Length: 452
Ligand SMILES: Nc1ncnc2c1ncn2[C@@H]1O[C@H](COP(=O)(O)OP(=O)(O)O)[C@@H](O)[C@H]1O
Ligand SMILES: N[C@@H](CC(=O)OP(=O)(O)O)C(=O)O
Image (tube, rainbow, N blue to C red):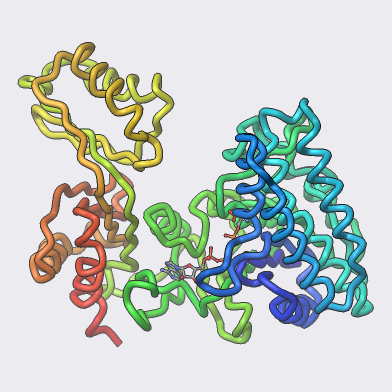
């Protein structure tokens, strides 16, 4: 049996849901269906999850919630009407919103309960639609499915005991439609995964039911070796390893959530990324091992903006036992997670996502580093972008770094930092944000343009 997950773009409106239903029923092995909340119908549109977040934030700050609520209800109303389904579900959404907003025991995870309603409602809509077409389909809530998670609002992690519970879904008849993006703590509290986390649900379900394949349907024919919004018509990737895909997603390939690889990887379930608008295309397979073409040691170029670097220097830092630990401990104390920490003899940089260290918090962090670590210099540089080259055999192929630096030079982009990943499959470059697009385009040209 297969697990098929449909992302926000695949369930954005009634027309897309018709395509989704056709895909599901065209293969009887597609028994376990995981869905996102309706995503953007066009570039200017707003994702339903973002509407729920707006509603929750407005409520928390005492602002009116009516506009966001109306937008959500209209979105589902249009969908239900175009699918010729009853609109009774709208009263249920309205009622659920009110319950969540006025139940004080939900204070710590109220936003999670709201965010989850997008996927929850969509799963109900899709199962009703499949039933209206005459198929045996049912909505299965993640609690009923057995998805147990840690008590971390907006950042939940699956608990191991989920997998045995999920396996029991194999005994159920018909097509099972499960909302993605959330699970429940053992105490019964709803928690969401990080943003984009329906991919994670799909992977957990695939591992739990021991699926033969996890199909992840999105809006592109395949994973490309570079973000298609930066380079037009880039080279398609046919096969990737889990490790390569995880590195690439972590560093900016938004097509698949980086945390979604692990459950599938551990259970050895192959993943296939496919296009809902073009389902007959083979898509991209993600597997344990692949043959390496010596001409393409670099499989992909990932990039992301919105980073900052804390640069610290101190004479004889190399001789001071525990310096790195103490620096990172300050970040732990301040609740800041870091991404990379390249270091030299007398200096060390810590790369952090800008949203982890808002300007208001900067002063405290700098003062603590100065006072507690007695450093010579500490500076913070914002507006950085990271570019990651990824490929399983990249680091045993001579000349990759030199080709990459030539590409930066050709684009006239200065490299602020270089870090070779310890995983040996990636090489990272830090640059100023404004150089991101020219640098990525130049790297693409040097590594991929002349390949067939
Ligand atoms: N390297 C890449 N290959 C394919 N798509 C990419 C890549 N990098 C970024 N993307 C973007 O990811 C999008 C699909 O991811 P996402 O919007 O999360 O899909 P979904 O709505 O299915 O969850 C594509 O439309 C594309 O713009
Ligand atoms: N709807 C959630 C979860 C998700 O996976 O969405 P999408 O499939 O649109 O990336 C979000 O927007 O974060």
